[in-house]
Image (cartoon, rainbow, N blue to C red):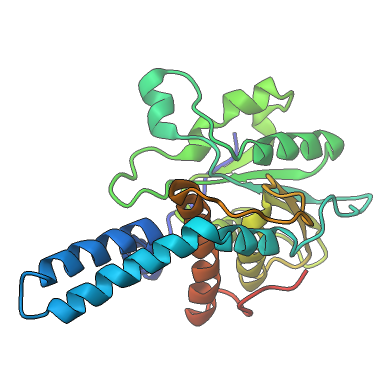
Length: 277
């Protein structure tokens, strides 16, 4: 196993904590709850009109999420941003995959690998690694937890890579990153890619625009987006959720990516709000 990268800077840490706190209040489910609670309390004070407004607004937003697939449209647009199954060059210097596939806390507690719906990131990474046996390989993922940084995802991935036919010793494990900005910067520090090197980036299609923006800003010279983990066919007619739970799930995921794109641009972490293919 090759050396692991050093931790991020204090500025990166401040950005990480600020983004987590900001998203806590902007999360659609949390936001609706806050509106209902504040509005309900206001009804018992002299701010009754404000309370009625907040409760009514929460009801209207809930109905929109229930009937209109706003989250689905937002996610599908992001999924279609970069080409699926891109044409790859004959020679590839490196392949990097972003984590978010393994829950290290459940894995350790249950003594078996706990995977989520992003497993295509690992399977495609392994497939490409076997196709390019000379390529440098990087698995980039620390922990995105705000309260517990004791376990790092990259430290738990080797067994599943081995099951997929990939020698874990080929892989460089970047285990300090807490978000996409740090994925790009710390992986760059770890590998020091040359100006003429060609790399492939593997992550979920809906996350690829933000990831590519971060990697380009971090100085990666020539990197090809290989999106995986698609939710949509790409051209289907989207139906009303008719379920607040389902609507909130998609709205949460879509808003998280779009707000992330805007925040990363405003904070200078990317050069464009919506990176080009």
